[in-house]
Structure formats: structure tokens, C-alpha cells
Amino acid sequence: MEVKQLGMVGLGRMGSNLVRRFVRAGGSSVVFDNSFDAAASLREELNASEDRVAVAAASTLQKLTEQLEAPRIIWVMVPAEVTGQVLEDLAPLLSSGDLVIDGGNSNWRLDKERAQQLSSHGVDFLDVGTSGGVWGLERGYCLMVGGPHSAVERAAPVLEVISPSPDSVGRTVGRQGPLSPAEHGWLHCGPNGAGHFVKMVLGAQRHRVRDDGRIRRGLQPVVQSNDL
Image (cartoon, rainbow, N blue to C red; front, side):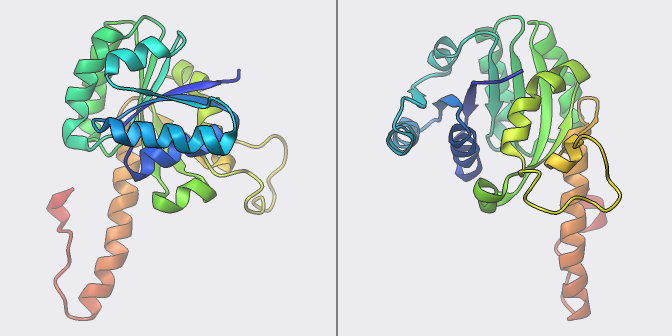
């Protein structure tokens, strides 16, 4: 299954680069941001560089949904503290069969409830821990996915485009047969909440390595164990 169109809500550094990576692979996107200037700027940049109408800029969430072909796939990439409100605003604009992906750093404990709320509209929900920072545009993003298998299968073409190319590193010694999703840089970690949970653990490990260095230098660690 090929996914040709992706909606994007939130055009910070990572949201914008996710769109750039998707469009460079031949897809098209409808984008929305609280700053319409950010959406319009990305539209002009990518339509010029791709020499085609690759991106449309929406001034409201309703116009975003109206410009996407059904069934829609919409990626939400906003700060965790506003994700709940964005999903509430988006839900009544969606139709049965649509799919929403939360790629931000939401608390994994909230994902099951959000999935249930969207399910009442017939909408699937995936929580996707997204790792790659500003380097993800060129290298690809490592993606930790939580949600039902059917929704993951539907999103797989998007995940494969956004994640690192399988030929970007050598294959693990002893691996044979078709490439697994993990070798594409993304993994279905379990039900809703699992993606953000694994991303939290990844972040904790990264901070722990950093704090070990601080402790060795006699400095106070930044992350306390009860912060998790």
C-alpha cells in the first residue's frame, strides 16, 4: 500500500523536516501551524524545490481536513502540553477510517484514553516516539510505534519513508531474508502507549549517560530517579 498524502499539524523543526523528508520521497502534504506564515513558507520552499505542487498550507484544522483525501493520515507534532487540546479540536473534523499519529513527546499514560476517544469517532490512533532531532532530515528518524496492528500496517509506508534507509548502514551479521521494520529504523513496540513509553526509556538512558559524566566530575545530576 502506497501513501501519497500526509497531513501535518505542527511545523517546528521536526515537524517541518518530517514533511520535507516525506515530500522528497515523492509524497504530498497538507500542513497546518498556529503561525500560517510557517505553513506558507514551507509550502513555497518545497513547491519550488520539487517543481510541483507538493504542499498545501491550511489556515485552520478544518481546512486541513478538507484538503486531505479520505481516508486521511494526520501526523500531530506539537508540544506535549497542547497535544490533548489539538486532538480534541481535530476529532470532530475527522471521519471513520481516518488515522491520527501523535509523534510528539506525550505522556504514555494518556495514549490509551486518547485512542479510546478517537475510536468513538471511528478513528485509529498511533503514538510514535520520534527520535532524530535536526539530523533526521538526512539520516531518517527512529520511530517507536504503539497501537493496533491494523493501524500500524496502514501507516507502514509513511514510517518507512520517514525512518532511515535500510541501506544507510550494513546489515546485522547473520540476518537473512526480507528486511524487518526494525532494520528500517522503526518498530511496533506494542499497544497504545508502548511507543511513547519506549521513547521515554530511550530518553532516560540518554540522560543517565550524560549524568554519569556529571557525577564523575562532582556535579549534581540533572535527572532524578523520581522524575520518571
